[in-house]
Image (tube, rainbow, N blue to C red; front, side, top):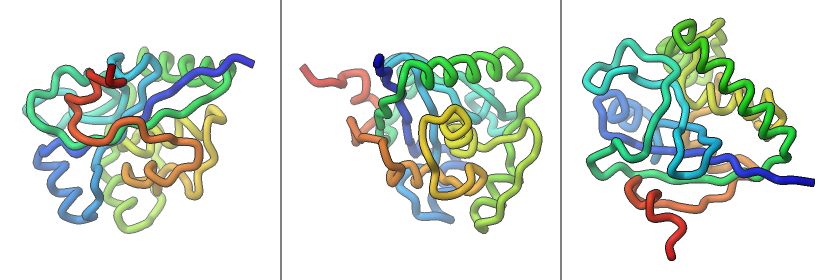
Length: 177
């Protein structure tokens, strides 16, 4: 049976929103993204659409190479079946094609902090999006609903294997020769 690799990237970027989340939660990582094309390929998440403005935010494609400052991160690999991988890719492609219909869930992120589940149509925060995508496509079983998953929770998800921990710029050099 063919196997494929999915990457989950956790970061703490240093933006004011990331600093606020870190201050409130003390979590090592405040943002989660998913990538289907290797560590150097695009990652997808719910985040700011414009570099200098927190809002508007929604479904975005992120490139590891655009970060210019030291950003702490942890990169995980998840091995999935070809069938699961294709479901992930199709769902992601479909959502991204309609990305203007999706919005960042500020209320959902706030509710998650208080361990309250808030589900709104076409509204996600970063870790809810990644967790929901993985769960809906059968890639993982989560110990709690996606609406309650924080980025740091991925560190304990069964099946995820850490392959790089350190600075984001180190991902481009991974795996080391």
